[in-house]
Image (tube, rainbow, N blue to C red; front, top):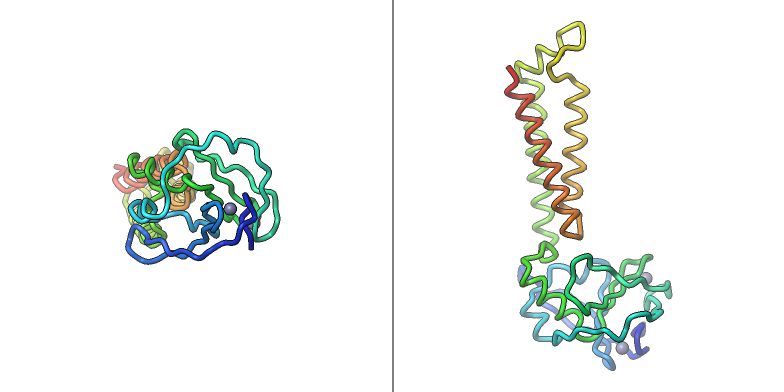
Length: 212
Ligand SMILES: [Zn+2]
Ligand SMILES: [Zn+2]
């Protein structure tokens, strides 16, 4: 496996994650670029990154055709939607590996640290968040079914004005999609959209539960 930028060999480096555990990565011994397997660049400790790389905006690597060192697929320049200026990162559309030329990893983490970006959310925190949101959704669904407002609507022979089973199923499905976006979203706008959907659904649940 060789560096996509300069074809140098990779050396194995260990980078501490924000939550303390070590993460293995590859660094080119010639150009000092970093290669990560899918999502390996997430949740790193900004201090640990700063020990290995010096922030350096790069404006010269604009249109380079780089190939994935794992499967030779043409890498795509990753658009960190709201990244620091001069950030150049490539990712593989096939294996989702990520390449940061020298200076770029530190540049991104320095910027992300200043923004309080959710990229720093570790996988373990995501799992806990997913479980919490799913349990909350389940409890609210049961509470909705048991609520007096919902019962009254179901027993009515004609479609009433109150919430019915279709409404509830729609709220539950929307809530789940919001949870998926909030937990798995990689970019701030996606994550915020997820939370917005969750907020609207929570409101929906409370309307169903406390309906007169
Ligand atoms: Zn290299
Ligand atoms: Zn690949």
